[in-house]
Length: 382
DNA sequence: GAACTACCTAGA
DNA sequence: CTAGGTAGTT
Image 1 (spheres, rainbow, N blue to C red):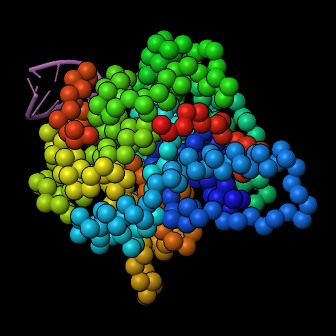
Image 2 (cartoon, protein in one colour; image 1 turned 180 degrees about the vertical axis):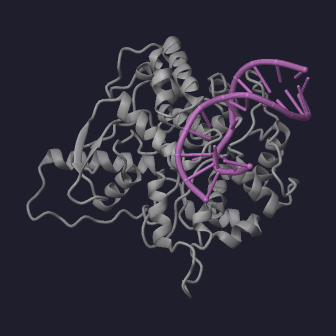
Image 3 (cartoon, rainbow, N blue to C red; image 1 turned 135 degrees about the vertical axis):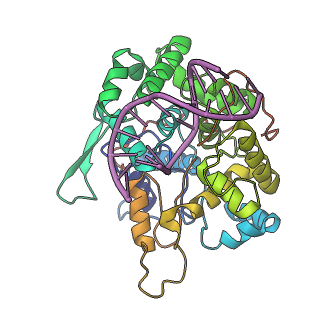
């Protein structure tokens, strides 16, 4: 348990802790998590309250890592239907989708457009640091002797104020500053900012959670109404926060994968990601992997990342590229989660968007534990 | 509709 | 010039 907790923490080992310690780029994890390590029994029986907290923590972890999903079985199915996947399955085991907070994930992915992972990570950290009060400080495991202060992810109302735009600009958010402020304002205007839920969440956040109970097409239509949210960003949120496991966000990586391994047209050069191409890539991958296509895509997405180019390959000679350890350290910096010895880590995806409102869908059919840091998630999966 | 183009910024 | 796109115009 403790091992897992600190792992979760490392995922968000930034000066802030986001409610789900994620953000774009955090979606996978390693295969050992399913078997939660047994914590040695304390010599003296733990007080009831401590046991309760531990039980709560376990519930949270099972939800966040979606441990009810039998990943090994899925790998078998994907491998039987797709020889390409079969080829990667052993090197990239245990990659599973995280169930991230909708509001936090939405804003994080708005930051992702036309951007790179390391900058996105810094932007999200800044968002927490500048728009949300510190929650607690803990020893920084990355820098012994230092202390790390954590901030939760800000509420919608904190980002809805008109002054936020300029502030974000000054923080280097570029044109995304406007998208974030306007999207936050849209939510607050539509769903209000009070009363707060028991978990200290605003009504608009809770409303976003309810999209988990809405079908994919309808939920996507809602997400596309926000500024800065196109097809790709919407699909990422659907897959990583709305339980829409069949959705395959098509970004540059995914497109390249489709071209390289699945014979999709896409001239070697930089092909513009048109809505048509998005749908083609999407349809192809969905037909290949089926109902959990979104989960399968993240495995190949991970395999496609540069830092993993040599991952899992015979550690023979002095490998010029990063060793698994280095690769994972890098990943951690990027806000991704990885377990030690055996693999993993991965992340989400970019691409074009059909005109807003169209919403047509030709596509698939498609802390450390002591001090509890993250705010509790509310609605469990249906 | 399909096809351009502008958009912030940090890093190679 | 690219990196985990989107909005606005032709």
